[in-house]
Image 1 (cartoon, rainbow, N blue to C red):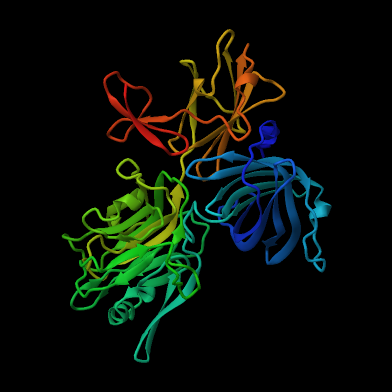
Image 2 (image 1 turned 180 degrees about the horizontal axis):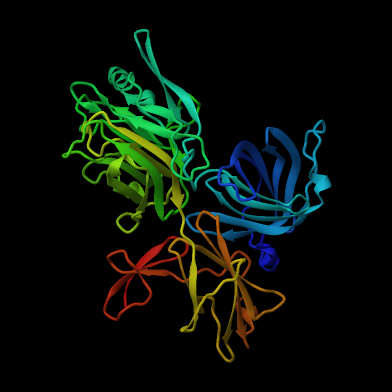
Length: 523
């Protein structure tokens, strides 16, 4: 495992003093496993006297083969803070540590017996929550452990592996169904109680043991539509909440909605929303679709994902309502049966048409038909829905001199430019990266002609490191002051929303800075 961010001691960035514990879900991947073990966990973040931070994964345990291994407190000192985009603060660090015993003295904590382990951390502090990747390499046990803590960058239960019982009742009659955790059906709808009961008393959501090809999971979601004589009730789930407000299927009173201000919870006790602080590039999922009776006028299933600012939003909305609340939309209203075979659907997020808000929540909705009340008694299986974050670094330019970047097996790269006699400013170095990659750079105290850059995917899952040497330059004078870091040059888009590598004279362009702000210019 590449030792990440060990060079960061050169450039501490002060953030607001803090000392807090954060409790959330922890997904644990061991030796490259694709299906995690998920457990509640607590992370403690405390500011040290020198302005750095102490980051502790408390009482860390592993469950393997039905056995529980009590590891201990994974504590990382000298964690540094950097300005990120969209109001996010980046916390990062890496070193060899000895894991200490956990807080419960009655447990047999094995961390102190494991010797030194290598720990690499990259995390966000956003909206008073922590989202973190912590990689732990235990050489003595030949074990690589990846811990992903918190929410806001992926879909909860996108693999549809876990479920809870949902119910709807009226006049002593109760119907139940299995709702996937983090998702909601007619069984937990808001709206007119009678209509909610009529829409929900026939179950639409089921646990399925039929999984997509190559899956390591055990379950998928099966959605079914129901013929209610007057109309077809499409099988639908959403990360928000369904509202049932009209007997007319196409009435906008029937919709999915979310609001971070809503206080209702589902049968499991979870809210009717999912956080989203990332800028994913696409939504991908596996589907298997069959219409009970093929309907040439309404042949398609549908899926959508809308990233909003967390204020009230509904889908469908009608007449451009709530557009100011939206950061990006991914939608596919033309999912075909494909002979009832599993197929992977990939849907890009459209930022260019929206990008009016900072993302705080995601409203993802899946339905057996793209048209309300249409289709027939249809079946839609859904598996492994995930948000995709592209990350690459193609080239680097210094004062107009461009170099292609070639990385080794550890995703490391070294580049040298001749800077003799040139005045060097941070903006003189530009990268060609994925649109939403996060770039930070630190001047090396030991070599004032060297800048170490890290190119991170927006969800922090992948990274590249680039060591840039500017021969003949002394960057001491332009070294970022405390509280600042080098960042990538603005991304350039034409008025059609397409990213371009150069600008033509007389044309209008949109520049997007690393902090998410934009401005329009005439070249």
